[in-house]
Image (cartoon, rainbow, N blue to C red; front, side):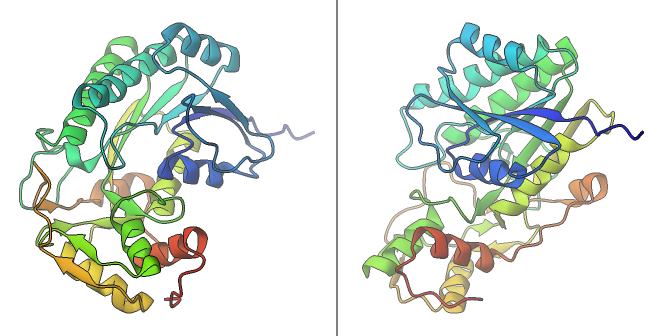
Length: 317
């Protein structure tokens, strides 16, 4: 008689955010996982899935967090929750407190559950700017508030994982968009301006960027969570690997989707400490996880328009 495959027990934080929501969507319907989604007390549940459990928690309450994980006995914790992704960003010290303290609390809780892997979601903004595609071995060094908070958390989680023997995978996504990116970042702002018939005020747009579809980013994270490999420590960049000037990218998206919107480049200055060159070298994740971005960015923006801006007339790419 064949033995049924084991069921992985997975905790996901940040289920109300763009990336966390798409990670949950990719776990939905699978019979080989049980998922516990942890949300902040004020966060909204985007979509509930059969068989998934949603729990609200004060992430600063280490005792409560430890109790939840001890009761669930996870095989893997995926830490997507972060502060400062949307605009306006929270107060500087509040941003640091969440991104650093909560990450360390969670790592401590994972260490108390033997055999549990931690997947920490960092950011490409943590790197020191080099003017070339960034590799996982490049230094983390930035004054960008969100990037600096995630860089500090990245380093401290790595140190704690080594000290306490926590199996750790770190992903450093670069820019991404797609379904559930309905806040006020670049592409939802573009679609909202097109929908409302308003001008979109932008920086000069000379910065080089690497944008990826959020579902491709989520796919890499889910693959790592289900991977049976034995390597206890891994770091991966996630991006398209395509370098393009931001102005050219926005104009390309507008043309391919047939958006009617006025773009005012140079109407606002560059953000403080914004890197002028932020592009991922994805050779390592290609080799180690056999991962490639599959979804063209224009398709991801079209999917965002279809789901979050249904009244907007958008040409399917």
